[in-house]
Each structure stands twice: as structure tokens, then as C-alpha cells.
Amino acid sequence: MRAIRIHRTGAPDVMRLEDIELPPPGPGEARVRHRAIAVNYLDVYYRTGFYPPPPFPFTPGNEGAGDIVAVGKGVKAFKLGDRVAYVSTLGSYAAERNVPIKHLVKLPKSIGYDIAAAIMMKGLTAQFLLRQTYKVKKGDVILVHAAAGGVGQVLCQWGKALGATVIGTAGSEDKAKIARKCGAKHVILYRDEDFAVRVAEITKGEKCDVVYDGVGRATFHASLDCLKPFGMLVSFGSASGAVEAFNLALLAQKGSLFVTRPTLFTFLADRERLERMARELFAAIASGAVKVATPSSKPLSEAASVHAALEARQTVGATVLTP
Image (cartoon, rainbow, N blue to C red; front, top):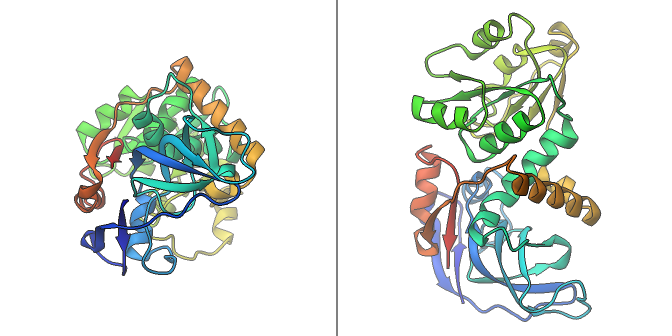
């Protein structure tokens, strides 16, 4: 079986396609034959060592979709041939993998493998951001950084469907068009404008109820200036680098603000919660509230070039790898 293996952290070229042996699924596991494997910025963090990697060599990737081809002892909820999708521990950049049952969800027939692989992590991330971390309601004003990115597009669509006014930031006019198409009523070109000043102008000084920030260091402090009193900054990514330490008194000075740093895997640790989140995501897709564009598809063997493009911010939307 072929899989991407990383023997040391570094640039994209540390990823090598190798032949490995996969043992039979253990108790409580199922073997999934991948039809599509998602690429996420999280994969870059592990490859570069920004997040502590597991023992070498390891296979990156946390998300995929495919068919169950074998089950381990004690597995009753899934059977051979079931269409499934998952967000799990590292190991998805491979033709097949063994996945703990607690991480699998059954995939509705109406959703293709490529769509599922592209949307699971991003869609479940948007779900916990919009429906659990800060529960967006009609009339809220929300700011979404990197609004044309994978999570950003889902946040814009779903946020609008929930009745919020969505303000997005983007790095180019082409990406701004994508954000507007996804439901952003206003889009700020952050390279040309001070986004905090523009937010104040757009909202006539009222500012935002919540800011969703997956960028990190470059946007953190200005994002605080975009919030109304008691507003919440949700930092969920570090594309520009980790947020540096700051004096908590700053939150009081700027209006008794709240800041949180949630992670998807904390929410997914509970099986019942995972199933609820997946049902809500699939329902949002079925209703048309969240439209998922067909992702770009590249062979697994081209994983290094895909990572290079992702880090250079040359990608728009999702990319999946196919074995």
C-alpha cells in the first residue's frame, strides 16, 4: 500500500511516497479505502514541526472519505461497503488506513467522496465556531478573516443563513469576489485598507459581536479593535504565526472583551457530540445553506507541490488528494 511518509520536519519535499504494510484493523477499528483525502493547513503545521510531530516516520493528514473494506473485532455499527467520512488522528495521506470507529460517520448518498473529504474538517470547524463557541443569531455582525479560504467560505455561507451580517477580509479582489459570493455583505482588502478602521466605518461605530480569526499573529490585535463591548474574538488558527503573549488587562481596556482558542478535536472527543455536529453539517449542505464547490483534485504523489501552493497562499477553496 502506498502512503506519504515524513522522516523529518521541513519543507514540502520531506514528504515521500513509499510502500508500507498496513496491519488488519484492530478491535474497534475499520479499514477505510480512501476515495478522497483532504489537505488542510493543519497538515503543514505537523510537517514543519510548528505542531509537535509524532515519532518519525509518520503519515500526515487527519481527514478523508471512502469505503469500509474490513472491520475489527467488536465493530457492529459499521459494515463492509459503508460509505464513510472522518476526522481522526494522523495518517490519512495513504491509499488505505485503519480508523477508530469513534471517529467515523456514515456519509449520505447525496454527498460525494470528494465533497465529504473537503468539507468534514472545515465544516465541523465552522459548526463549532458558529453554533457552539459563539452561537450566532439573527442580527449579529460577524467578521471572518480569510473569508475566501476553506473555513472562511463555510463561515460566510452559514453565518448569512443564520441571519448575521457577514464582513470578510481577503487579500485580493479575486478572493473578495469569492467571499461576496459566499455571503459576505462587505469585504475588506486587508492589503490595501486598515480592516479595523473599515469595520468601524461599515458598522457606523457599532463594531462586531464576534471575530473569527484563523490568521493569528498578523491580525490578532487589530481584531480586538473590531469588537463591541463584551464581544468575542475566536482565534482558531495561526496561518501568520502564533499569537504572542499579551497583557490580559487589554481586554478590559477595550470593552470587557472575551478571547478564546478552541480546537476541533476537543469537540470531536465525544462521540454523541460528533454525530450531532455531522448531522447539522450535512443538513446545512442538504438545505443549500452551505454550498460546497467541487474541490481541486491532485494525485497523492503530488502532495509536496500541493503543500507548496498552500503555504504560498496560491490556493482558493479546497484541494483533495486521490490515491
